[in-house]
Length: 181
Ligand code: 5GP
Image (cartoon, rainbow, N blue to C red; front, side, top):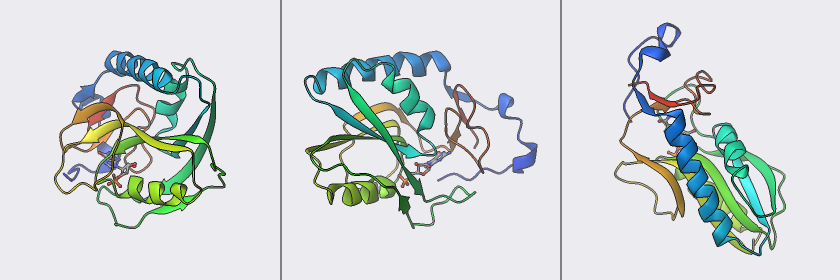
């Protein structure tokens, strides 16, 4: 992953390239909502948001679903105030997903390590079905071989922030997605 060169305290985020605008995000989430609603017609969906990064995406996505759903969260940490993965993924949750139709909602599918851990962990509960939705899919080599059924946008290997995604806990509040590198 590309590193951010600037001192984080001096980043003028509004001067950085906007990769995906607020309108583009809204439009795509509407499409995803329609697609997911069709696929889960007649079934109750259990959405599992991955904190912290997916909280805005999940909140917007559920408002475009036209099927009954339940919403819960798990916490996953792999990046700790830095842009390079430590390779270690820590999951925290208190979920019971046995026999449920589970859709994990993640901010970004980068190496896939986090999603792989989540999948292994949640599948131990024997859900009725298990799928993943990620807002962003980063084009990198050596991704974990994991099926992400719903993808919002394909992006290059850039470090992005905004719309829930942070750099050292900053910039989550941006309504669009910007590049930091
Ligand atoms: P993975 O395990 O797929 O490599 O990484 C998953 C997590 O890394 C994401 O949920 C996200 O928190 C973080 N991450 C990966 N790429 C980026 C990025 O470009 N920007 C930000 N803010 N976080 C990222």
